Amino acid sequence: MAQSKAETIELVGPESSMAPVIIVSIIFHLIVFIIIPIATSLLSRPTVHAHAATFELVSLPHSRPTPKQTVAPEPQKIEQAKAQEPVPKTSKTKPVPKTAKTVEKAAPVEEPKDKTSNEDLSELNDLLGGISQPVSSMAFASNFPYSWYERNLSMKVERNWRPTVEDDKLAVVLTFTIHADGSISGLAIKKSSGNSMIDNQGMRAIQLAAPFGTLPPAYSSDHLDVEYTLRASRR
Image 1 (cartoon, one colour):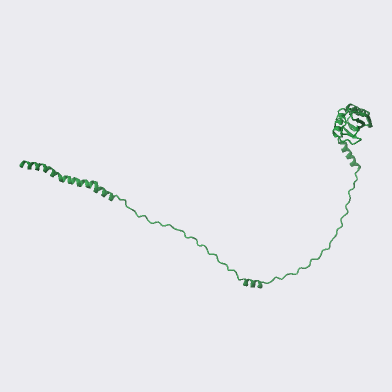
Image 2 (cartoon, rainbow, N blue to C red; image 1 turned 30 degrees about the horizontal axis):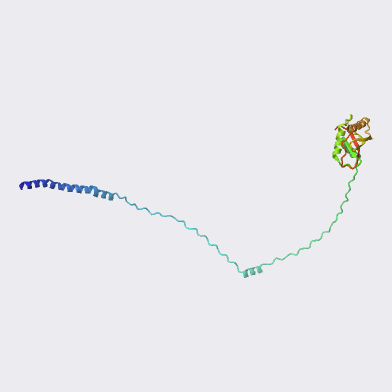
């Protein structure tokens, strides 16, 4: 029994000596892990600063002047004022004297005298003389309204007209008859140019140009009397 007690004392003795150390370590850990963080969190809270109050200046609306109300005058007062106004006196206008009508006699208009002097006539003749006359011209004894036939006739004659003297004042007038088949007869000089050479050359030009074309079928006659004039010009 004594041995067993000694053994229990030995067993219990060291454990009982470690108990205070364990308690102290527990308390230390509690302080380190719980109390210190709580204290630091409480101490580290940010201080809230109160903001200063700000004010905005608001401009007051401009007060508009109230228009004055015009009071219309009473109609009776207006009529009284009109009645008191002085009426202007109208001045009598003097009658305007009538002006006598003056009748002016128109001066007689002189009629232009239609008389030309000899000098004017000579100048006109000079101007007309400067105008070139056609090489040939023709006239028909009867109505012949076929201008195309007339053009062909003059072209054939002028093609054979070669005067040796060029002078527009020299002209020979020839007469002849064209039959239905275009042949001619009765060639003669009606008016001489005053130059026998020009007269003969004119007759030769007609003879070389003949026969002419047949007369138009619509023409009423079987022959055509022609009066042909040739001037001493090669134009």
